[in-house]
Image (tube, rainbow, N blue to C red):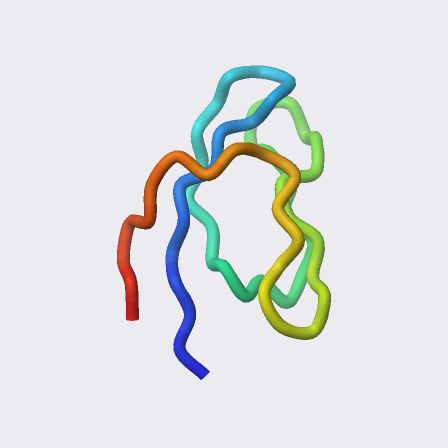
Length: 57
């Protein structure tokens, strides 16, 4: 049940944002609003580049 917090780089605006790897909701970029992650029932489908794993559980 544990998941990771991941730093994702937005391809549209160069923003970096931390999100949960098993996101249950769609995660949008806080700056430009583009979709960074889509829930899939398990690990989220990431739409940006993973920069770093901030916290691994």
